[in-house]
Amino acid sequence: MKTYTTRDAAELLGISEPQVRAQARAGFLSPGRGPRNSYRFSFQDLVLLRTAKALSRKKLPTRRIRRELRYLKRQLPEGRSLSGIRITTEGERVMVRDGSAAWNPASGQLQLDLAVKDFVSEVAPLARRAAKRARESSEPLTAAHWYQLGVDLEAAAPAEAAEAYRKSLGLDKRHADAHVNLGRLLAEEGKLAEAIEHYEKALLINSKHSTAAFNLGIALEDQGKRALAITAYERALSSAPDFADAHFNLSRLYEQAGKRAAAIRHLSRYRMLVKGE
Image (cartoon, rainbow, N blue to C red; front, side, top):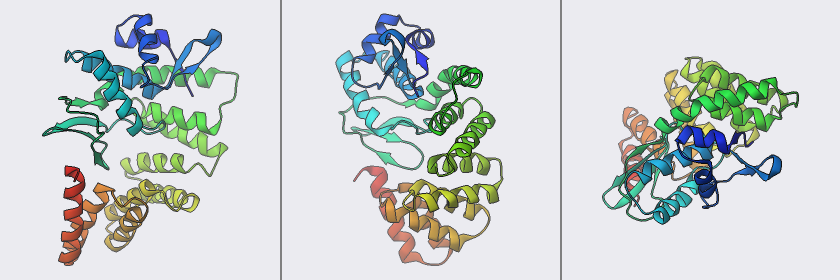
């Protein structure tokens, strides 16, 4: 769902509308089209635009900025919450981190250190405005629309985001990602039993949903159920072998269980993934 106009983007960034349109043609955004063929941007588009502006302040060539962001775009599929994203450099490599993985987007030796969560917070008021428009619209929203609104609202209004995920599930109870995101918000409130229920539903819908399995492991661990948490983390790795944080958590739990060989194996793998080896 593309809910933000060229004017919205220009006002947020403090640049002209022609400059926004030029960025939209650069290949690192995925704008839709509205009335009279005008651009309509997603929340992710706005965050990438804000990132582009931050990079331009480092006096990098425009061509290089756009090239780097085209690589980054591939790492940020639409629908993912961007609050935890951070772009850093380690030696000569650019590393993108999202709390559950670290990777090199293979886009050159750019020197930067940007917390995208800061950009998300700046863009968040527009998400609240879009949500208000959606609620007041006479056109009914689909489950996918409510899910996307939930993703956009997380940084600004977690309670409203949770309600959006519930509306999404009310329309499509098999929306696995809505179950996962709602479960995570519930877990952050300390409602672990409810969170676990949503993670398990997501896994029934998609048995290979590695994020659902990983989050389930965290919730079970918080309940003191270490053996079940190990099973959940192993399940996450069965479908996503390079899930760095799952390796780290397993290393810690196996160490606590006295299984030193397994702990060392997972810790070694975690270190290799973080270093990009």
